[in-house]
Picture 1 (cartoon, helix red, strand yellow):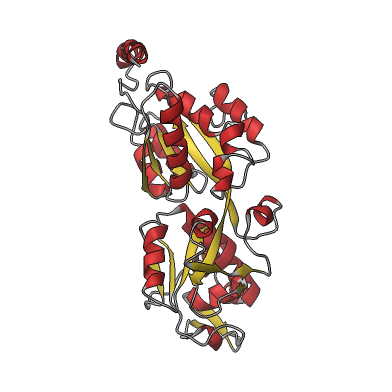
Picture 2 (cartoon, helix red, strand yellow):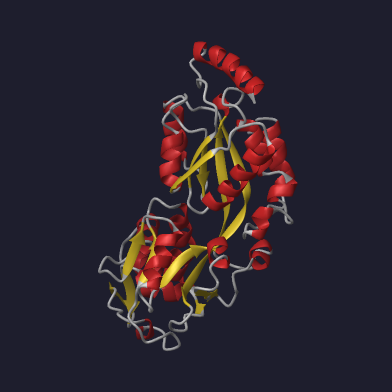
Length: 346
C-alpha cells in the first residue's frame, strides 16, 4: 500500500504543476441513487481485492452528481458521476467551461423503472402509460376537451383500476429516473389519450406540447420524492393506497414488501428488459474525469473493475442485484482501457 501512495504522490507533484488534480488517496463518486447500490457493491469488492482504499460513494441524484462532477478539476472535486440518464449537452458545456474537457462515458448496463405498491394494498397490477398520464398529468382529455385534471380516483378514468384515491410517489426532478418516467410514461400516455393532439390543435408548438405533456399535477395527488427509493418505500408503508416508482433492482430486493404492476401487459424482469420487451427501461452510466486518471490512485482500475465480465457480466454480482448486463460490455471495457473520451471517435 505504501508504494502505491508514494507513486501517487510523485504523480500528484507533476499534476499540480500542470494544474490538474492534486493527490488524494481514494476515488470519490457521487450521483444517481439508482446506480448507488451497484457502485457500492463494486467499491466494497474493489477495496477488498486491490491495494487501493475503498472508493467513497455518495448518492444525491444524477443531476446533483453531474453538477459536482462539472465543478472543475482538482482534489476537491469528485472523480466519477453516476447517472441513470445520459449527460446532457448543457452539462457537457458547463464541464468544459470549468476545465473538465475530457470525459469518459461508461455504460454499465440497463435497468427498468417499475410501479409498485403495498403487498396488502389495492390491486395495482396492470397499467398502460395512459393510466399514469390520466392519474398524474396537469391536463387531461375529458369528453373530447383538454381540461385541468379532475380525477380523484383511479377508477374515475379506468373501471378496471381500484376505486381508491390517487396517491403517487414519483422521483423528483433531480433524479435521472424522473426523465425516463416523463419520456416513456407521461409523454407516451399523452399521445395515447389524444392529449398531445389536442394541445397541438389548440395552437401549441410540438415542443411546447411535449413540455405540457410532461407537466405533473400539483394538487397533492402526485408527490415528488427527492430522496432515494427508501424514502418512496417509507411513503408507501404509511399509505396503503400509494403507488411508487422504483428501479427494478430495488423492487427485486423488496418483494416481501412490494408488488409490482405490469406495463402494457409486460412484467418487469431482467429477461424482459434484456430482450427489449418491457417498455420502461433505460441505460445506466457513470462518467470519469480523465484528468484525474494517473493522479487519483485506483481511478482507472476501479472503472475497469466495475465493467469486468466477472462483475458486470450476466453471471456477476451486479446481475444478481438486478442489473441487466450490457451486450456491448466488451466495447465499454475497451473504451476505458484506451481512455476514450466522449467525441473522440467522431
